[in-house]
Length: 113
Length: 113
DNA sequence: TGCATACTGAACTTTTTGGTTCACTAACAG
DNA sequence: CTGTTAGTGAACCAAAAAGTTCAGTATGCA
Image (cartoon, rainbow over all chains, first blue to last red; front, side, top):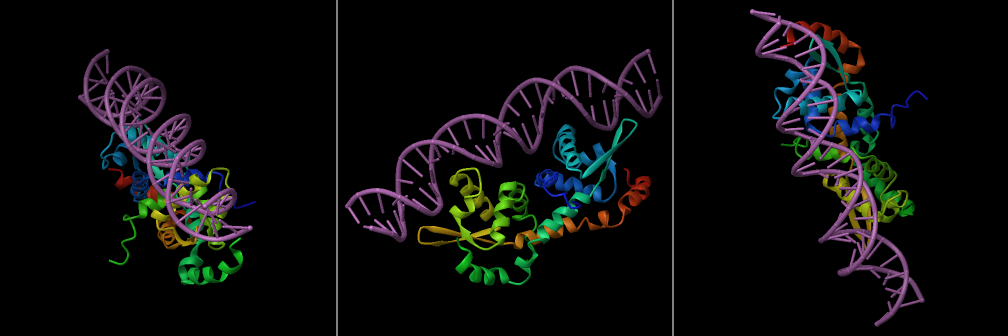
């Protein structure tokens, strides 16, 4: 079992990236680690709110934090996104060719229960 | 404007795939189109509940329906997942090499505001 | 020491989500 | 026709999510 990533914390990851604020946080951290306050600054919400978003990202394994004095420095941990990318890419054959419509036509005759 | 998919309905897509039931529905439809009832059958919830999930998937552009008599036949529409895959793949450089930690070390000195 | 800064935690509010039930419409089967 | 099957729509509920405020804890700085 090497690819058990799915359905273990995967659900958390999908839930984590569902929120646009959290996706924006990830984008910001892609530019390099930064302090909680700096991450929070661009958003029109309190620091506490952003702090909660960050905690959700942490639990999803997407962000890690290291304390430097009173500052919390956040950095991106993108591995879980690999699973997401691969999950979506699993549907590749449906968008590559327009074979989804084609195959639909085929299978309809048999598979339709 | 051909690639405006992002941020237009993209948010809906991310929200749509956040729910495990809805991901399961997509998986089922990957095997071919099927009727609402048949899609609903495996789940431990009412048909109405599944119907609502399907509507969310439709609004996200992930599922389309065609009526055949009184039956609603659902089929997968995977295009939006391409955007998801590409979005996640945008973070590829962070998981490919362990260069995220490396670069973190670099940028920390300058970027830390 | 003593005040400002950088956060967290707890309590609370509002909105959204995921589910239910029940009544309804439409289509098919005898 | 009549009854059964396939599905929606509306009203409702409980729990979760997203945000707030306020109080508290460390750390840094003068």
